[in-house]
Length: 361
Image (cartoon, rainbow, N blue to C red):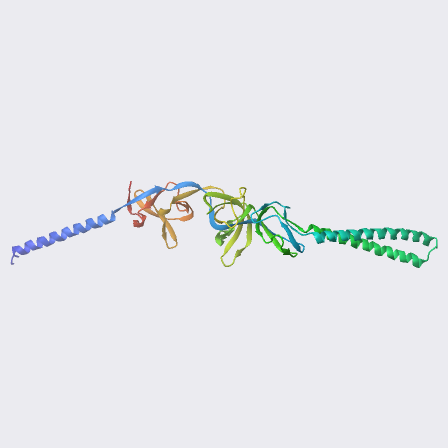
């Protein structure tokens, strides 16, 4: 048998050595990949007192708005209020010239007096004829005539009374009074104007309290109840918060927007708030309660799934959770997490189930 040349033996040894070295390097790289450590930052899940709420935008409206109109025709003699005038219920706003109406009262009063005198005379005659008729000193026709005349003058007296009452009522209506306490929003008349019955003269609004109109989404409609607390801010005072209570829940949803209209009563003692103010509304759905919360940046969203990573024994554990409302920079976790569990807040995008982690300080 021929011996192999020396160079072939050397080459064989080199090849075996290289293969062994490459195999060893591959095992080390694989082991290093499995044991890779990911740096993260963490924060313990905490419990805080929260109040469930929904947010909305709304508009402040007058508590009540009425129109004061003229109930008689005539020349406007005087106007005692202007836009912005604060008025009380029953306060004089304007007056129509009452000359003709006073004369009508005088005529009606004179007619009533005449009718009263006629009735009195007729009654005296009736009594006299009645006595004579009983003694058969007058005919039945004569007695019937006076009886008929008594009925007619009595009816005339009632008409005269009604005419006087109507004349006095028209005279009283020449003065226009405020039907409620509030502020004059619009004035549509000036002295000297001729007005007709039913002509709108003033629009009066009540601004203490006010109404706050806003809408909530259909999904929240079932949680709204009268008496719930409302807090809101307005652009005119962004650093000041105002409050009220839900007073009315409309019985139907708006078909186009699928929203429910809600109304709240808002105190306005200092009259700072004005009808028409835009309001950013927070409607509290109940009393404060304890809730587990985590920072907003710890949440991962994957299609319809919401998850977080927690650290257990130095390794990342993936948790599917259900979230509630946002409270500042914190988010409520309603299912899937307990108080004081260690939640990954930075680096979670690089994690997978079971990955070894190093908590950065």
